[in-house]
Image (tube, rainbow, N blue to C red):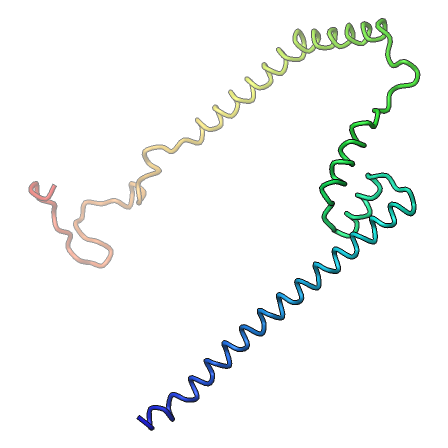
Length: 177
């Protein structure tokens, strides 16, 4: 029993030290996280105090918080949404385009489309058909013939019954085939 205790004591002590280090790291991590949260809250409160001092809008306050990568309070989010909904879009001061100008632009576009459909599109279809026909002809000329599959040219094939090593070739019997 005493021998076993002397052999196992260092291992037990190491296990205790590892557990202690693990719990210490966890507690330090939790402590740092709590400090970080307190810093974030303090920074958020400082920015909200600046809002009251400087008369910032909700949108300006939200931008200041986002520059610090801080989460917006829910009430501020709602204020920002309300402010943004009141922002009017920028409109054309000179009245924009007249009906006559719009009609002229429409007629020019329709004429361009008509030209495309009557002239350009048939020409393009003919070009594509010619390219496809040329490619098909090229591929047909490159097809492999029966002789391309022959391992030896016809003049090297002989009926001598001898292979390159000088051994006699065995004739194939019908039962093998």
